[in-house]
Amino acid sequence: MKLWGGRFEKATDKKVDDFNSSIRFDQRLYKQDITGSIAHARMLGKQGIISLEDSELIIKTLSEILTDVENGKVEFEIDAEDIHMNVEKILIERIGDTGKRLHTGRSRNDQVALDIRMYVKDEILEINKMLSELVETLLKLAKEHTRTIMPGYTHLQKAQPITFSHHVMAYVNMLLRDLDRLTGTYKRTNVMPLGSGALAGTTHPLDREAVAEELGFGSVTMNSLDGVSDRDFAIELTSNLSLIMMHLSRFSEELILWSSNEFRFVTMDDAFSTGSSIMPQKKNPDVAELIRGKTGRVYGSLMALLTVMKGIPLAYNKDMQEDKENLFDAIDTVKLCVPVFNGMVSTMKVNKDIMLQGAKGGFANATDVADYLVKKGVPFREAHAIVGRMVLFAEKANKALDDLTLSEMKECSEYIEEDIYEAISMTACVEGRSLIGGPAESAVLKSVEVAESLLKEYRM
Ligand code: ARG
Image 1 (cartoon, helix red, strand yellow):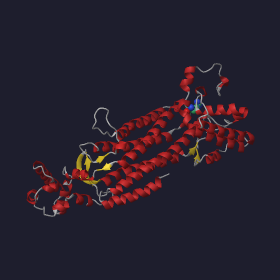
Image 2 (spheres, protein in one colour):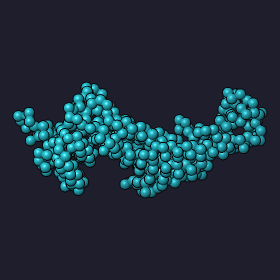
Image 3 (cartoon, protein in one colour):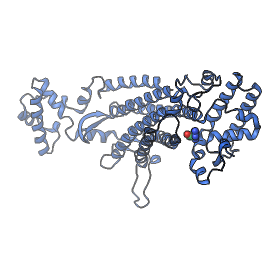
Image 4 (cartoon, helix red, strand yellow):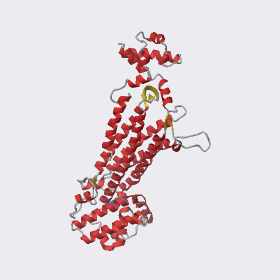
């Protein structure tokens, strides 16, 4: 019989049992569920709501069940519906009537809210660790390549020279914000809902704060309806995960492009590449492509969660059981992607010479010619037009700007002197941009320093 079977005259239809049951996917919450129940049982005993003996027997048996689950000795049952009732049922099978006292002053509604919050907290810590390790890898790369000049792009057209270090640091800054967001979500998840009951709390004198303390929560929820009704913390995490994937996906896209024969800016390590079943020459960036592809499923989870929650009245509704698979899948996907992305970027070869060649083509120093003229007194808008004509001339002559002779340049503007060549060299273009946040070596090293201290702050 069902734990809630008292008021029913018929058994549940088999199809409904299968349909209703969440044990297939919520069994991964077993540890949070049992640990939460142990804290609840201890508190019930201390408060005299159940006897101390009962409390101790329940705690001891729950610990044994936890060990048994971990050793694969427990089989969960579909018709016990979910992890919460499976554990309770096993407890009652083992210690009879005493086990029936565990659920005093509690509902599955606050129980599941507790379990998911505990789960989300644990997972945030793991993801924070993986992401911090990735940031470390990127910082290392950035420090190695402060003089590795490459073209920067807008519209995927060569724009201005930067360094590989500067490019990598752009992603470091994005991932640091991701880490910061994770710590914020952790803070809001770290609130203990048990004691909310089904929706209206309970008449039993629970000590909510003691439970929160035993389970490592910072505080308790302040409204019993809210405590069982919202999943905003799970949505927040999935939103953070979506942004992490968005960042990895953009970087992946660049690495895919850069490892093509047209670019050759990077060479992926063999251990992080795959071959073709028909074309013997192929070495494909599957890892980066799969990360880009998996981004979509994390976005999908976010949209699914938002949609599940948008129309349901307070308090608990069974719709909310649909939170789990999406949340779990988003978490699993990110935990799969971050370490493999880390491995891929830490083993790839950076082809400095080709990057430099790339920076030299495509008139990436045109702005610097204009800035040169401005420094000689020409108004910027005029300088822009002069250099535009110079580019047109160089393009027709099939030359780079710095390959033009001084007299060719002088035809465009009499202000141009011999010192132009030094002023528009790739190194000068990069090193001249030494403002805070710029690509010059000194500025990048400063940004590395700031990033390192932020990483320390956000690491959990
Ligand atoms: N399996 C349920 C879920 O995941 C647990 C809560 C069930 N509560 C209820 N009143 N049916 O949401």
